Amino acid sequence: MAKTFIKMHGLGNDFVIFDGREARVDVSPEKIRELGDRQRGIGFDQMVIIDPPKSLNTDVFLRIFNADGSEVGACGNASRCIGLLLINELKKSAVILETKADKLRATKAEGIKITVDMGSVNLKWQQIPLSHEEQTESIPVNEGVLKTAVGVNVGNPHAVFFVDDVTQVPLETVGPKVEHHSLFPERTNVEVAQVLAPDKIRMRVWERGAGITQACGTGACAVAIAGVRRGLTNRKATVVLDGGTLDIEWRESDNHVLMTGDAVEVFRGTVDI
Image (tube, rainbow, N blue to C red; front, side):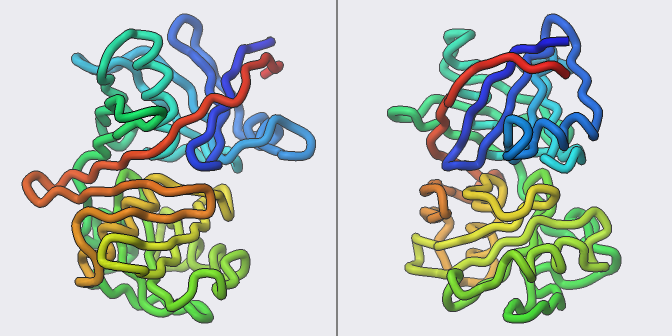
């Protein structure tokens, strides 16, 4: 059956979006992998299906899938993209997006920028989650040049490593090893971060189920939080990714993390699913 889709990206982290509000959209993991193939399909890092709201005072419910067909609880860049779509469609200044992980508020910022309140930050070992108790600001994971991770959950798990030069890290080699490390029973996203200034961090990312991507919104949040936890950065910082920059603020008042960045529609089309 042919379905209309929208292709969008946030700093090069790209998505195929289906609207299932009027007629439910279900896609098998095999079909997701087929569509996600960049040579033989549409190509994307994540697929997102917009469903009718499940809770009061929310606008939609999002189902989010990695290119390997696995379902995830959150995606920061996708939340900005869908926030932009719905703000324009519904003629609202802010929308509430519900995911498996949390309810996220997306608001219009300047230009094509959208700010998403990613909700509370989870830092306990059970929340990351880890397979057993460890101090999450210094998780004993060592793979090649990567030594001792900071664990953060921003709707999905992250392992952040601070290094002297992110360009020198063979992320395509060490990324999958950390993703599948025995300490992470649900696997993990992997970030390498280089502090440029107290308010500026350079990062690269290996996304769980997607591999190396141009950007990761929840990853940028995790890196900024990890910098504060290690005493390396301020609570407001610009995170520089391969695809562009995100402004991150970890509020002390309520433990929420705010992410601001671009969201861009690329094209629309139809595909058989």
